Amino acid sequence: MAKQTISVRHQFSAPVDSVFGALSDHNRLGKVLGVPVRRVRDGEGDVNGVGSVRALGFWPLVTEETVTSVGKNSFIDYRITKGGAPLRNHSGRVDFTKNAAGTEVEWMITFDAPPIVRTIVGKVLTAGISHGLTKLSSLLK
Image (cartoon, rainbow, N blue to C red; front, side, top):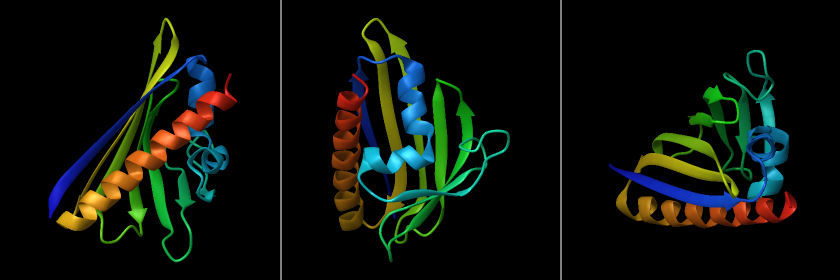
């Protein structure tokens, strides 16, 4: 299997803490991405922090993602820890950068998958994240 990497950048006019708050909250993330998301396990010290687990997707394609590291208002790292086949080694990172216009977000995902799956999933993830960040941008104005 070969590795696929996608990257989506989006500029928000909102401050970093607002954007980070919306994208780090498991219970709000579903509204952004347009798929069901629910917190399965609270994190250590912060319900959405390191060690927290969220289930996302529609049955029977539900996956669980575990938050592996967080820098408040700076970044969120996570990986799929249950489900997601035929994807392997799926991990994501969301970076938040304050700038003169507000906040830039870069959402990067890497995973291994067979060639046709890699292409399709890459396009679906890119489109879904782009749409979700655009929708969130209008909500934070």
